Image 1 (tube, rainbow, N blue to C red):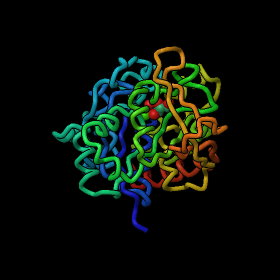
Image 2: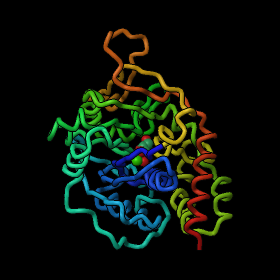
Image 3: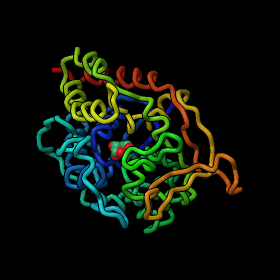
Length: 318
Ligand code: RIB
Ligand code: CA
């Protein structure tokens, strides 16, 4: 079966970086490009981190297009530092990347690539959706041309991780999420309801580091601050593999429990800004616009992730 061709729109970010590695370790996936956006950290660092992690994985041939430095309306906070560190990728200490981003802005790159090959490209958004929303506004022809969007974001019954009611990617740019949710593009949503069931633990890191490899060391170094944060603030040993879980839509869809629902996002400026909610009782009579993962066999996904990281680590060993 031909691999699924994907572009990842990303704000690396520790779990974003693990997503690139999982994509590169998965024969079911052809990673076409990365487009960067502000989110966990500013655009300079998210773009640098994207280039550096590709270089670490010997994948510098994959183009990186630099995207938006600010959300559509809101101002970006700096909450990411506590989880992702001031570098954006934890305690990893990757060298300055040799490669540069391409000249084209991420918005124009997305439009060009999607229109050039209609229904061939799947877009995985694992950060705020500013780039995609503005690409839709700039050239609506991408709506029928884009095969699908798979989004890490939102929370339906699991509460928020940046405010009590909102998940980070959606809260950072709720207006962008609103544009995307109502675009008509086929959407699969992977919310906190599923991602918090996928905890990478310190024992998993120890297991991976039995393999002497810069990849295994990176996974440990990058997640160190993330793990400390979860232990200190959420009381558990481990960090949630929010972004990597999106790729299970391709490599292990059987792990999910999906339902189709009408889902919207609160773009008001009050305490519930960025809240995502589903019309479970069908009271709006509006048709479902999103296929959402309400559950997942989380530990099975973490095992799959670890096996793929072990394979990648053996292929890039000391
Ligand atoms: O809420 C989790 C999301 O916010 C992930 O994409 C993580 O990288 C952060 O961007
Ligand atoms: Ca992210």
